[in-house]
Image (cartoon, rainbow, N blue to C red; front, side):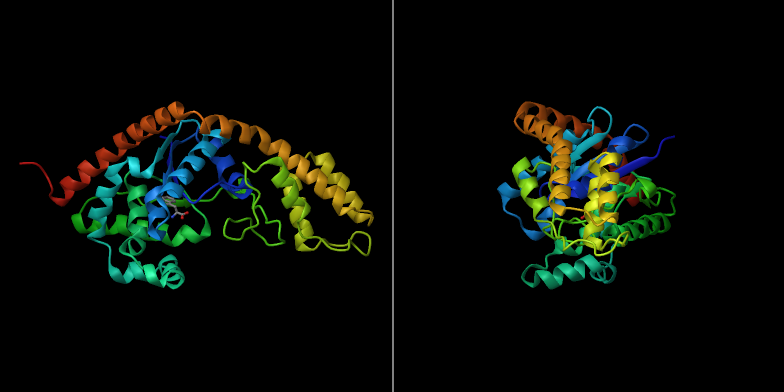
Length: 330
Ligand code: TRP
């Protein structure tokens, strides 16, 4: 049988090229070969107390961007976390076997506690249990996660093992981290750093206006140019070539490589080309995004259908877990 793959994303705003080439593009491909659940983790976003309107808008943006990039709600199960109350019930049940010592030791908790000392809430502490509930509620086999989430996945496995051990059952499977191997392209930032990231402020967003993309690319870090033929490229120049490789034709990449090697490169030309090719790549996505955003009826339909499919799978798990734990009707 096909694997169950599950991915969650916190609703903290628009998606960028790094999200697309890192994971989203692979999700679009995978949805046909696996039983996929893609959800937007709005409860997880609440740990930092976002403004209610911003929270709702962020969920909508990601949902529309997922759809615009080709996640097909007829193929995969696409849902909003808070539309599936079974997750919350499993979260409560799992919390009974999650210990303060292990929860407070996670890197993400310690980091948040340091960053927001005035708001070290219980939701922050039990963030990993909620994430475990997200995963275990569908008994997922594979979870595509970045490095920063591996510790959470390790805890999920531990909770699954512990549950099975305590109740003498083989109920939960231990989900494994999934990285896309060769398919994973790490997209660098425009500031010379190794990674495009929202908090780094170096992103090109999938739905940025062409003018904005143009401006961001033209401001990318460069230098005086190579001083000797065939010299190695410094990281910040390599980054521009990496971006060029994902959005431009091989001919274009070769052209600028040759120019670099012969010390004739003009960064202005390179950036103009890169901006134009990013814009050509993102324009259809942005147009679909805008259409979908304006189609409230479609969004309603998609989220209701997604919740229904997700709840079907989740309610079965919760029913069985309750039973195992001794919660059953008279
Ligand atoms: N914690 C994840 C992140 O910040 C988001 C997330 C929530 C998640 N629940 C999940 C990821 C379940 C994978 C599976 O990126």
